[in-house]
Amino acid sequence: MLLLIPGPVATRPEVRAALAQDIAPWDPSFRPLYAEVRARVAAIANCDLTQHAALPLQGCGHFAVEAAVRSLIPPGGKLLVPMCGSYAERMARLAREAGRVVVPLPAPSEVPLDPAALAAALAADAEISHVGLVYSETSSGVVHDPMTTADVVRAAGRRVILDAVSAFGALPFDMQAHPEIDAAIFTANKCLEGMPGVSFVLARSAALAAGRAGSWSFDLYDVLQNGLKDNWGSFRFTPPAQVMAALRTALRLHEAEGGQPARLARYRANADTLYDGMLRIGLRPYVDRAHQGPIVLNVHAPADPAWSLQGFVDALKARGFLISNFYNTTTPSFRVGCIGAITPSDMARFVAAADAALTEMGVRVRAAA
Ligand SMILES: *Cc1c(COP(=O)(O)O)cnc(C)c1O
Image 1 (tube, rainbow, N blue to C red):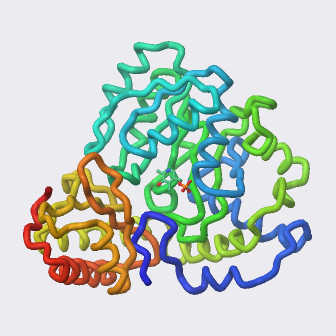
Image 2 (image 1 turned 60 degrees about the horizontal axis):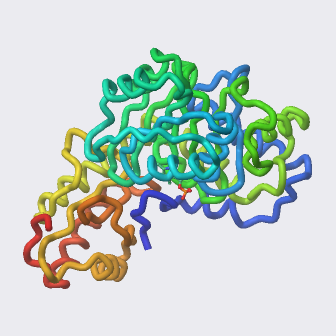
């Protein structure tokens, strides 16, 4: 079964093989593995290790987003979140439930965030200290160019928390060029093509403060202190050591492929093949070509009464492809991931399978509902 979902993604056999071992994570033999993973992820983001730290956290991406919000924004502090899609909504919810004040900035989901709207929102409220940005909005497939928007935040003298979960490793990123970014968040299991189970916050160390998180588990300051104390020998609490081993292999493969630019080029080719293919079989992508990112593609559900998302998912599964089985957009659309250990030829085979699945379902009207 080929996973065509925007994470967890299809992985290479070498990455899966790295899981098949017992590891004692408190033993010194784990140190080189841990050090290599931290060094490699920091290098991808051009971190300055005198200022930034790669802080790992057990668990999924939202855990790391929550840890960043709690560890950087004091309780009662104000976070502006441009509401570009469901991942922005999730950041807003977890910040609110952590007792931070969220100022939502209404924003369209099908086009990149307007920097002028962001500047106006910041000018209107001097109490906003942080802006929560989503780099690649995985619900819509739109890439929001956080470099331009982060420049706006820097000009306004505020700080950025960047959800780079579906971007990191594929979309360009430079922590040194953006001193206003206090945290950038990603997981092992998206564009790095590793396994789920570990997430990271690339944090500006000086922005973290003791006792602010209101949670020991989510306290990045404590994660940092633990690392410094122990010379980064071991995690705080039991790490997913096998997942870390798989990530090390995935990071070596990332470099061997040509790093971030090569990965972006492959994903872009995947997305282009898919976009063209969907048009050719009579379907309409959700986002205009000019704004379509390389990570995930949404396609309008056909208007035909014979259409059902689960029916389509099942017919694709019978043909060896797995796509998302829930709607993520305001009007119904299905979602296909362009990331993972896949190539344009996989996408071409998927287009043929989608065409055959729709024919089998009796979907004649393929125009958008
Ligand atoms: C995948 C993703 C997350 C984290 O999802 P988890 O299921 O918690 O790992 C957060 N933000 C974006 C934009 C994502 O694509």
